[in-house]
Image 1 (tube, rainbow, N blue to C red):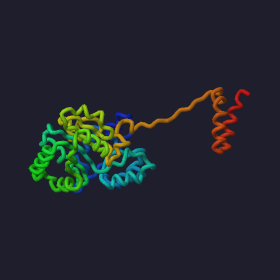
Image 2: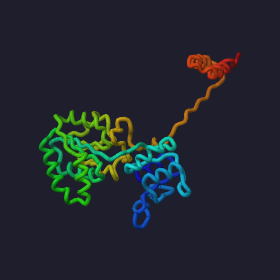
Image 3: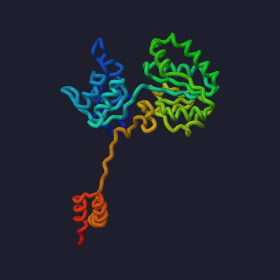
Image 4: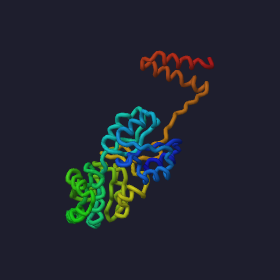
Length: 293
């Protein structure tokens, strides 16, 4: 909520509306969400989640006003619902399951790398947590750390399923190959746990966010570090970007010609229109070319 509402406010959006799923027991939105909405300057907050929230925001209901744009990640059904209403409203993208790639060299701390992979896999069983490293020794050490830590975690079953289906370690010939693989994957999060991480940054072409160095770990980006953490997933970082104020700004073209300029340009426009077989267009242009005759 903070990652979207704060940016909307900074962009100057006059009315910010948010939806949050209610607690199944009380039917109320959690206090921490209410507090975040107040801090972020949300005007209206509705106890509503899932695809039904997307439908209500897009079309309006007796209690929920229709909006112009819907932003923010969600589960599979939220993503599918956003796809359905795109064109009726604007959307920021169609974020899918979260994903993290970690590029690490032999000097990386295996405990830290393991902790970051576990944190990513904790999201859900479709999350991807992948290590790219030229060091087999590091990969084996990370695997051992994960084994030791996994059973201590409350979401161990989800993590285990995620790692089994979408996680793993890839041994690359060198860091150059690791960067090439990362660019091909175009991950939502790319963490550079190497001796000189800034040397790799110019080589990264596709990533939602780059976390530079072992102290710039992805969990901080989830909550407190960097710009918005609403980032492109599923390879869409090849052509999409994280949420910014520009997602809440639209541009209108303004065309204003004086009589002489219109008269000078009209014959050109008429010629192009005639080539396209649009006689009415050509006639409208020729009318303006008579100005000053």
